[in-house]
Image 1 (cartoon, rainbow, N blue to C red):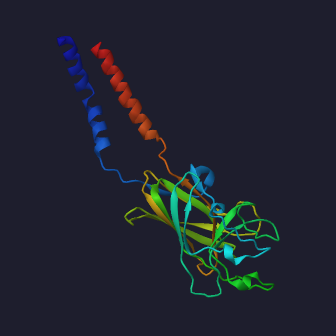
Image 2: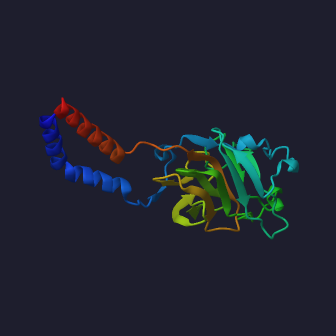
Image 3: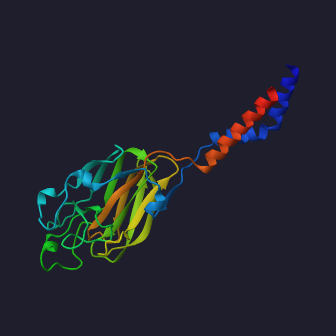
Length: 260
C-alpha cells in the first residue's frame, strides 16, 4: 500500500501542472466567438425552415391576394423549432403585404435563387404587376427579423433585392437579453438567372446564444427576399474539446497502470 501511495504521490507531482492547466481551462469564463459564413455548403446546418410550410404561396399567373401574409407571423422548422418573423411595415399604401412565391421561369417570378425555391418577399408596389412597371419598382425592404423560441448556434439564408443588380446585405445577431453579438455585411447580387447565385448570409457562434437575427440591405425602398433558413440547433464537437478529452483519458489510464 505504501508503494502505491508513493507512486500516486509522484504521479500527482509530475502531472500537477497539466491538471492545474485543465482545471483553469474549465473554470475560466469564455466569451463565445460569433462569425459570418457566406456559403451554405460550409455553414453546417442541421435544421431548416422552408417557407412552403406556411401554407400560403402567391401565384403570379393567377393572383390571389388572400395568400398575402401579415407583417408578423410564426413558423416552425423541420426539426420542430418555433420562430417568429417580423417584417417592418412600409408607409407606402401601394406596397403589398409580404408573400411567399416559388421562383421559376416565365411566366413565374424569376430570381437568382435556385429554380423551385420558395421565397419570402417583403412586398411590392402593386403597379409592379401591371404591363409597364417602373424600374426599379418600389417594395418593402424590411428589415426582416427572425426570433427563435430557443437560442441556436447559428442560422442563415440566401438574400436578394428586387431590381438591384448589386447591393450590400446586412445581418445582426442578438442574444436572449437583446445584447448585440455582432453585425456583418457582404455584397450580394440579384438577377433573373435562377442559378442559385444569391448571397448566403449566415451567423455562427461557439455556443447556443443566438436568439434573434435581423436582415436588411442598402436599398430599403426595394423589396427584400430570402429563401429557406438553415439552422444549427445542436452543438458540434470541436477540435479543442477532443484534445482535452483524450488528454484526460490518457491521464486516467496512466494512473490506473501505476496503481496496479
